[in-house]
Each structure stands twice: as structure tokens, then as C-alpha cells.
Length: 102
Image (tube, rainbow, N blue to C red):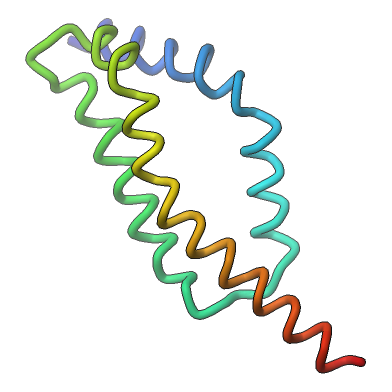
């Protein structure tokens, strides 16, 4: 079981994360460089969702590699709405702070 967990985690880290490295770094920088906004509590829910998906792959009754290859992109798309809300709230907060300075 631990061998399958390691191989599925390695597959996620090598294929999907490598393809998305630039957008992930850009999102991380945006979150670090902007002020907190009203939608930031959604980030904890997003992290829990990612953790649950990460744990579901190795526990799956099917082959974990099948789950990674077949479902990971679709699952990643389910994270998009929450992340969009958080980023949009931070962007509007940054704009209102910018207008207040002018």
C-alpha cells in the first residue's frame, strides 16, 4: 500500500505539478503580496479539499495510478471556483486600497 501511495504521489508531483508550476508560483506570489480579503477563510476549505483528494487516491479501490491519470484534472477543475473567489476578493481589495491612496 505504501508503495502505491508513493508512486501516485510521485506521478502527481512529476506530471501535473510540473505542467502547472508557473501558474502555481504566480498564485502563491499573488497571495503573498496582496492583503487579506473577506474571502480568505475559503482558503482553509480549499486546503482541506486538496488534502482529502490527495488521500482519496491511494485509498481508492481502483489502481491509484488510474485515479491520478483519469480524474486528477477534473478534480483540479473543481478547485477553480473557490480559488477564483479568493483571488477576485483580493484583487478588488487591492484596487479599493489603491483608489483610497489617490
